[in-house]
Structure formats: structure tokens, C-alpha cells
Length: 443
View (cartoon, rainbow, N blue to C red):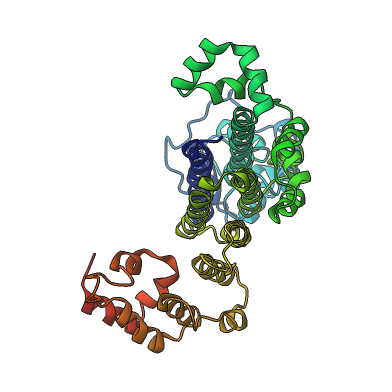
């Protein structure tokens, strides 16, 4: 039967790698557009050109972009060629709205619309002016840095998802009795024991015994999924898109200039891949747990911890979906364990789910008020009031939770949770929350 540590490792690795990529993507979304030093200098140079028609040359820094072309003199033919070149570059700027230029192109278009003699006269030599036109000819076809980052982020998520699913299938082959017999026949007893002792069996199977094509990966994954579990329906909803991403169609190798993907769109696509990777893992784990009781407790802890990690990472859309999945899995585990209260152990998940919904822009007040916290631990009544932003009432309960209980010598809410839990962030910054922190000390 499956080793809990291996399942946890496979899921945690995928989630943490995805979180790292997510942080990088968020920094790109929040930071201004970046571009190469060469292009930045070129834009600065052109924006300094005098377009007032006064005939005065701009104050161009000597040596900023040294002329590198052949010597050109101002003849009628040169003026005609300059005009043609200006028209060409203008058309490329107009037709490449997704080019790398991080500022408005209006000024550049005005500079390029100057009379040829005026444009040439704006630079210290005619050769230099022609060099500038040559530089401009290449600018409009270079994609924006953000479009490149979006495309690459999707590609890296695709690579990680594929590796994750292949490792998951390999683990299932070790667990499944029929598959394991086939593996023993392929490797032999001695080599199999050596690979298992060295912890390399999953990697070996992933390399040689798991299909690599998208449709085959999903089909083989479906052989091990629990099709009666609620979350199988969610898996099926995402399946077509996931095959598309794994096949590197639609989004992976598109041209960032002619068909760009925004960073926000890339974030949504990456979230879909993370959700599919996680729910596939937990579906399979739940299938094992149906027949192996020792797997149920670690499964419940793992999926609860997963929702908390997603809150910490501010991945609220993913958290919302995974909290729904967690809620259903824990209810099913309670049924398997013969627990009459099918909601036992779901209250923290419910709080995380409600908070994630609110952070996604949903109205949650009616759902929060409908949450019956009368017969469960006071910490959930506390969270309910926090979610309703009723901080005065919450503070009264929070005072009790942070006060040491004489019988146990412990509090019912540790101060570390108070400082770190994302749900409590607004309350911590409120007057009521600040007073509680001041009274009950620091971490």
C-alpha cells in the first residue's frame, strides 16, 4: 500500500514550485514594464527630438548612440529614400501595437512624420539619422517583455504539471498490485529492491514506464482516479484545457507579438493547471484512503494545510476551488470513519473558503451569517465575526481565546496564529485587534 511520505512529497513539491512561479508572475504584474538598455536609449533619443518646426536641433547627448552606418549626404535621392524609410517604420509601428515600446508611441510617430530634411536635421549627422531609422525598423517586431514573461510562465507551468502527473502515475503503478507485478518482471527483484532503497523507483518508472503524450497521460491518470468522488467532476471540467496545455497548443508557443497573452491571462491559465494537478493528486489519495484507514488522517491534514498555504500565497482563486474540494473530501472521510457528524473537521476549511471567496470579490455576508457556530469551538464564532467585520464583538471572544486556561496552561488561540493567519490581517490592523496584540504580547 502507498507510503504517505511519498504522496505528501509529490503534492508538496508541485505546490511549492508552482508558488515560486506564481510569486515571479505577481512581481511582473506589479512592476513596471522593462526593456533592453539599447531600446531604452533609442526611445529617450527620439523623444528628445524637436518637433515644433522651429528648425532647432535637440540637445542630444554626445556618444549616447554613436553612428555606425556609412557616410550619407543630403541629396534628392537620399531625401526620397528617407521618406520611404520613415513611411515603412511608421507602418510597422502602427501595425505592431504589441511591440516592446513601454511608452506611448504618439511622440515617435510625430517624429517619424517630420519632413525628411527636418528629420535628418534633428540629428548631428545624416548617417546618424539613418542609423536611428535602422534601429527603429527592428523595434516594432520585438515583443513586450511582459508578453514574453507570460508565455514563458505558462510554458514552465506546463512542464511542471506534466512532470507532476507522470510522477503521480508512476507512484500509482507501484501501489497497484497488477502493475507492480509487471514492474517486478521488467526490473527483476534485485534491481527493484536497489531502486526502492535508493528512492529512485518513481523517477525510473516516470522515465521509462509512463506515457509522455498528453492524451495518454490523462487516460492513464483516469485509470487510477476515483470516479465516484465529487472532485472527479471538477477534474473532468478542466480536462480538455489541460490536454490542450500539455499538447503545447493554443497558448504555449503563440507569437507574443501577433497574439500576445497578458500576465493576468497567464496567471489564470497557470491557476487552472495547478488546480488540476492538486485535485488529481487528492482524488487518487482519497481512492487509496477508502481501503486503507491509516491514510485518512494524513489526507485530511494535508488538504487543510494546502488551503492555508494558498491563502498565505494570496492565491485566492485556487484556494477557493481547493477549499471546496477539501470540504467534500473531509465530509466523505467522516462517512468512511462512521462519524455521525459529517461536518467534523470542516470548520477551518469553511473559514478559509469564505475568506477566499471574499478576496475573489464575492459577497459572502449571507453565507457567513448562515454558518451555525453555536455548538462548535469559540474560535469559529470568532472567525465568523471577523469575516463579518464585527470587530468589537470579535474582540470580546478573542480576549477569551488568548487568555491562558488554568486547567491546561494553554490558550485556545496561539499568538502565532493571531499574527500569521491571513484571515485576521484586517482585524490585526484595526483598533480592536491592535489593543489585543498590545495586551497579549508578541510572538
